[in-house]
Length: 244
Image (cartoon, rainbow, N blue to C red; front, side, top):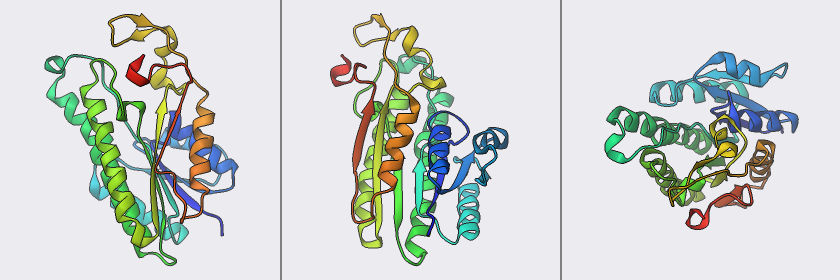
């Protein structure tokens, strides 16, 4: 049976590249994102399921996952990818609204989508499925001035570990891919130079986003009794250990 996956944040960047990789591999793909236009651009001429949805709205998330499950009969995989960054600043210069926006997308949104997918995978027959969370190098070590983003990505790691434990008795595998410097719009500044922990501005290498998509696809292809709890994929020479 052809497997199905919902990919959040599918209208651009890592989500778009991953969706296109899964479509090429013959999966049934649900493209979830706030704006329908970019989702349709990702889909192209494919038969991808277009799922406009604000991940920060739990009612919308539940309805959207129910729609996908009704359309396919089940949900086999979720790539919980939607995320948002914020301009770098010391904590006292970060507006509370900015903090709330990042937490709502990166943490609350990820919780709502994982909750909806987990519930469907638990109820369906045969039971089970896979959830792959998009963490970040920032789930391990911060960049300067990144309190909202780094805090949420550290929290995602805790969510992944807990879901991985809770999912065992329901045949649900949960893992996380921590991505560093994929060549997307979010990383556009890296080749031009970005602030480092020592205060210097340095150019950082980036990698082809298609390699990230292939890594997610490889995780998703595993049988459910096998799991990659955590994978780190990064441009080899980017700052990581100690951000140096």
